Image (cartoon, rainbow, N blue to C red; front, side, top):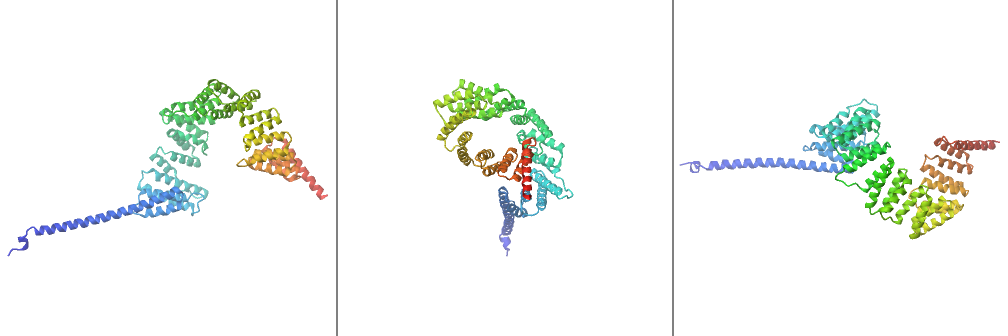
Length: 530
């Protein structure tokens, strides 16, 4: 009898094939299970990381640290988790945070960043974070008079090597070097910052490390940027800003003109042209400034607003007397509305040319009287000491805008000049109610009215308010001293006149009043003892 294998020689092969397929299926399932577990772990890590990042963006460093710590425990966590965890810890170490010891959080941040750097040494972000945490620990060591630990400088330098165009990295290192007193490296960093990103220089003067050597370094960097053609318009703009800060308006105007000319893909705005015109005015080149202003006026639809802005530019450049000449040229070449002419009237009044101002004003008001025109009529009348005419014009302006605080004050000044103090007080109080916050000059104006009304107590309250709002003004303290004298409070008068004398030591009158109050106080004490 033959065996089953002999009868079916392929049966053994079939069973062996089935066992092989089963083994392959089991292996595949094992691999799939492993991959699924790995993917699930990776997914869970990513979710917690994303949640921690969201908390960081909201500024909730405590919750961010909790989520990121759990993410860091995941075997699938990458170096970016440690980097974010360091950010959370460093945020908890910030002043004002009530989450424990700043040193402990800084040390945790240092360790988290160090692990991230070890996992990926070519990522500049954790290297920079490590530098920040070490710098904070250096600061704490100095405050607590401890032996200094690992310095932050090599890690700042390494972060910049990895990201050579990192603006924030350069800026932070500059602050660190200023704190450490390393002027050599500080100037080198500032020069490099100006070279790679000239626009940053405009904000540098507000930094504590800004100094003449820092400015020289930034200027060298800007020069290098111009030679290489790197951000040429920004470099010229920065040089213009630095020159203007030094009062070198000629170079400021030249660089700003070069800035506008080198911006080939951008048409200069009206505001930029006004700025160039203002620099030229300050440099004394009024002819070129006028040409630029006329070009702006010819192209703008908001001519009245532009003329007012230009008048402000002339005022800032202390050349308000030259503004009417611009207006004359503008009037010859284009149509100017009556409202715009009022700007010229205001300029002429400031320049003391009341005759020309009143001539234009009369013509404009006869054609189309406006409340702004009446306000200027009142201002012109005040210059002539025609206080009745000033009152009449102010009332005309108030008839159109009864709640305008400027017009209320015009009327108050007219009434005060006529000796009608009670009415002036009422109008001044109405005007003060229209201001969103107290103004020191307005409190002084009303305080003087109270003095004229023989109300020294109310006057003192206003003068105190003014001194509180402007504590560097000696006049306000002197007025408070005067009101105190009228109230018979010699001790308080001595105090206020003493403060005025300290603020203005050259004013002999303040010292005399202080001594007079002191003597009156001593006489009163002697009489009391007698």
